[in-house]
Image 1 (cartoon, rainbow, N blue to C red):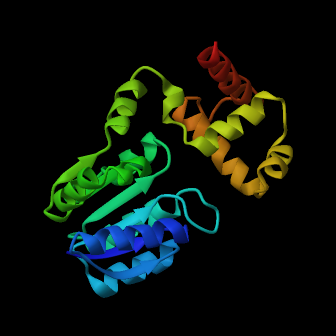
Image 2: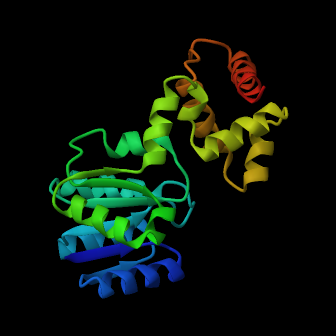
Length: 215
């Protein structure tokens, strides 16, 4: 297979190239950020593209957004997304359309070489691969609305629970106040808190959900 690899970690990027090369595959491009991944995928048209969810500059969901952009432009693209953690909304975004030729695996699976290579073959052949931990998370989400929050949104909610303002949260997370506001709006939406309610009331209600979940 011809493969494009995208990961900001030079160690993992080189490791994947060696692993794939030993398996008889050709890495036609290895890049470290989302835009470069999009460019490489559309230029090389590989059999499959591997991309890490979190890449520069914000290390949140750049890789996921890059994969979705590739699929919008080239619908037949085969993409394997790797993630350090289970983030259910990411999986749902990735599989929202036609799931053929799509994979979402935790990075730990890469160390299980034969299973990883089999999963990559499945995606390249147009199949679907979903990490078992992601499947469990999708099932758990039916019971826990907080499971819908991304790790960053959980961080914001936790700091919100400490009584911090958006400015204080932004300083703690080293992001802009605007970014925090976007996170809080997504938190409120995922927790089913009406935009018609007072903002202060929604913050309190969100914190109550967090405390109940932790209890």
